Length: 441
Image 1 (cartoon, rainbow, N blue to C red):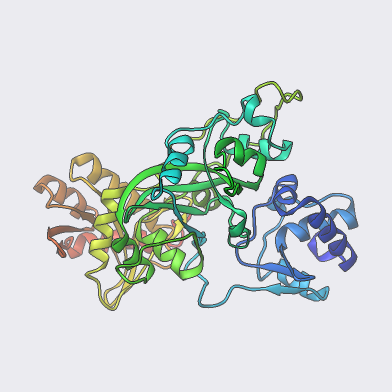
Image 2: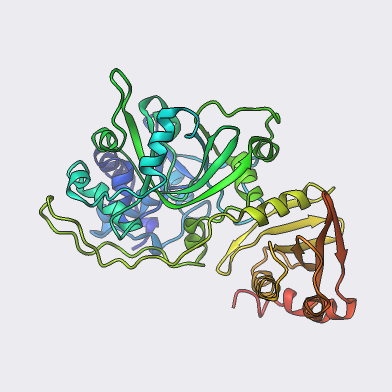
């Protein structure tokens, strides 16, 4: 049996369970990720369509389907639900990405302006919080602790949150979304959300409210966290705001505006890499001692290090993209990772990899990444190029040109020079870039 056998009654029983458990616990229980594009609408609420259909299967066959048992989306889950008389919310054309990259949400969170927020920063962003210690673990539900251990197997994590006044904004935020921590006219740090839940008692342990003040309500951990120094003017240029916009309050952006900020800053989340198959997702927590006064333990291995944000490369890409005209700028994700720039302009499709240094190790890294990404491009590429902040030595130029790769370097502020690869080398390599037999191997 499969999802085609799911009945309307099975879906309704599943929705009741979803309401009873709560969305986050429901997804965690059955191993599904939050929906990004298609939502089942019922009784004024939105539900994760793929998860609902997979779990509903157990009411007709005795066993729920796992996320890996079937694909979700317009060709599978949507027809099943509409046939059963349910309404499904579909992504608008304006919000849909031009390629297969999943667009995450982008939060802009004031966190370094007032004395109180700077104190919170020092307590839970500047250093990890040992949430598995009895002082904190006693305030967490078993489900919340399990999810935290999944993303932070050493029992410590950086945390941030929001008051209840932001509940509506925060309701759709999920693992893998990006947070820009702001203050004093700059983005001060960039983070990737891990576990997110509501727990005022746990929040009060980390951020005791001032007398008469308001407790924080939503709490989220950070899978990755890296300092930054990005002027508001730069961020506003990416997001389409006025250059003097001051970001006075919490923002939760989605669609093209979120995509513009994340791609423009070259942010690469661990969650996006996992979704694309470029990185193994965290293992399931398999061991948690029952007694709550003991420190929790887990058999999950610490994930490999991953750079969330490279300040120098991001600045270089922003400056370079500002010089382009009549060109669409995108990125795409794949089992090889997430490329820096994928251009579609008057000269065709071009894949560009940016590097912050010109040493040979950086040149070789750009070469390997370009050749790897090219076979996963959503359409065949016409050119490959490596972008650098200054000219290369002749030896490094010859290396890239041998493989048909153009070289672009910054000659002056806002000025870039291109050194095209010999046409013969490019033509020899293009056969490999365009080969459908070799792509996705």
